[in-house]
Amino acid sequence: MKLKINSKKIIPIILAAGRGSRMGRLTKNKPKSFVKIDKSKRLIDKVINNFEMLGFENKVIITGYRSNQFNQFKKTYKIKNQKWKSTNIFGSLICADKILSKYQCIISYADIFYEKDAIEILCKSKIKRGIVILSFNNWKKYWQQRFNNPLTDLETFKTDKNNKLLEIGNRTSSYDNIKGQYMGVFKIDPYSWKRIKQYLFKNIKNLDKIDITGLFQLILKKKICNIYVKNYKKKWFEIDNVKDYKIFLNQTNLNS
Image (tube, rainbow, N blue to C red; front, side):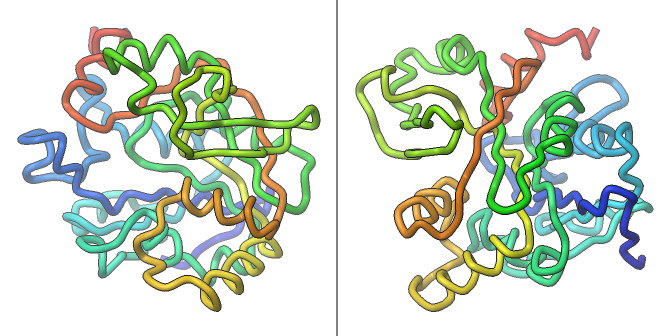
């Protein structure tokens, strides 16, 4: 279908190419984002619904594993990451280069659960140039449920007094170096995307192997553009493996 521009002139891009092999039999025959969150709704349905409730009729979905199953979503513009087996999440993002180069975009992972308020926060942000990322407020309590020692998985997240990101993605042995948690949802403008792309294509080999946190590290180190942080206080879950999925089901009423 033809991509239609909404009144906000912001394009949602949903990254849904991954298989999710750590989900075991749950993703044997379907994409990771198709796991059920209740009897009738899947993760991908919730992400799409978050945008639709705010008036976004058309969305872009980057597909990969079992891409034909996304054909059921009629009001979406689909782009297949042909290299989904060998690329990281940035390899999917760059598939939408033409869109990112022209429009302001909100990027969302497809294997996370959050409320529409997250998208609303990004839409209301008045920052015109740079990246705006969301930080989950209740990160510490959540990671304590996911890991016996959360610091084995958690990484640095530091901001200044103006809510600009200073550091992200490094290993740390202290909670003092963690002031938030990147959620997998962010907004970016065409100017910033072009600057990022220009630097990466010129200086970095194996672009497909970069993850988003690694991308943010490069942006900060090379001062390519500013990254701003907005806090998000409602429900958020990362569904990375079977244990995460069980924690999610136990803490929500969606399956009741």
